Structures are given as C-alpha cells and as structure tokens.
Image (tube, rainbow, N blue to C red; front, top):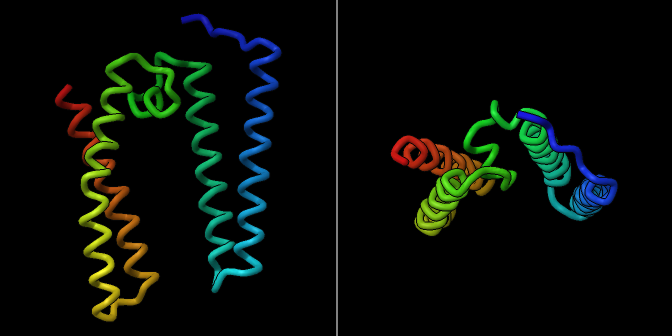
Length: 142
C-alpha cells in the first residue's frame, strides 16, 4: 500500500497541534505541581507524556504502515473504515454506561473510609479494563 505524503499545510497543522498539546500538558502540569497536593503534578506530567507518546506512535504507525495497524489504532486515529469507527464508538458507549455505576461505587467506598487515592486508582483501572474488555468483545463479534 503506498504511503500518502502530507502537504506542507498538513505538516504545519500537525506540528502546530503537537506543540499546542505539549504546551498545554506542561502548563497544566506545572500549575498542578505548584498548587495541588502531593505528587499530582508529577503524575499528570508522566501520564500526559505517556499518552502523547502513545498517540504519536499510533499516528505514525497508521500513516506509515496502515495495513499492519490494529482496529484500535485505526479507530482512535480516525483513519479506519466504518467498521473500525463503529467498534470504537460502541466500546466507548459501553464505557459511558459503566462509568456512572463505577463512580458511584468509588464514592461509596470513599464515604466508608477507603483511602481516596486508592479508590480513584481502582476506579481508573476498572474503567480502562472495562474499555479493553468491551473493545475486545465488540471487535470479535463484528
């Protein structure tokens, strides 16, 4: 499959969006390091950096070798066909349905005395797991 080259305008747009994302990440991260409790700023910077690098890798793989990318990569970078988009949309819908009860359980756990940071960590992991399971099931069935 031939590689489609980006025009100069598209390259400038991509570079500008990347710089804007990095600037926003650093700005918010530094604000959190200064004013938020504990290591929240460091965690934000690390997590945001990992997310930006992950998205960059997915975008690069999709642009260079689209035949070797996964359904998730094509869906997330919006470069796939209708099926890829439908699988991602349905998976995110399942996550949306599960988010409210999961958040309610985390709130009840905090009210009963569970450490807040532990409850939020378990909530985040549960939501990531729910998205992964929903995506795998929907991808397999469609």
